[in-house]
Length: 133
Image 1: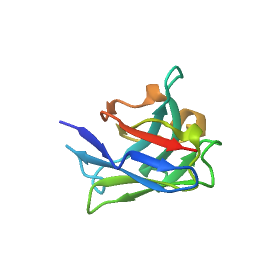
Image 2: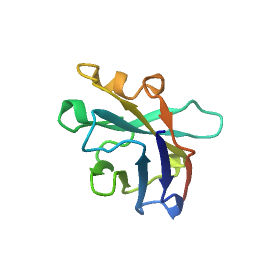
Image 3: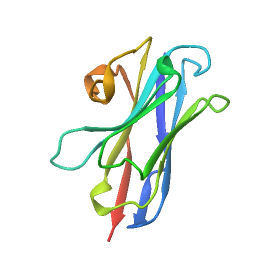
């Protein structure tokens, strides 16, 4: 069955960097059409989609406005892992970060659709990121 495992969370000072990893099992990134996204949820707030990579669109990457220019999503087929590189982090980036996946073709959905939690079927357990000022 499909499983996603996040790693790389922790505590970091504002302005620092962190790399999160989402390792998939049950399917191979180089063998199927998929979209994998990162979401985050801060205490008392709704889950927020922040970045997505969509193999159906040639690996097109989507970013939410709060992280654009600071976060970078990438994939490694050999490691079967999707990474989220976080640079110049801010205290408002503090949250539990989740990766999520949907298998199959997703075309013409747009950024809002690709960052919608309801699109994704498989979820990881989450990893805490805490940014101190």
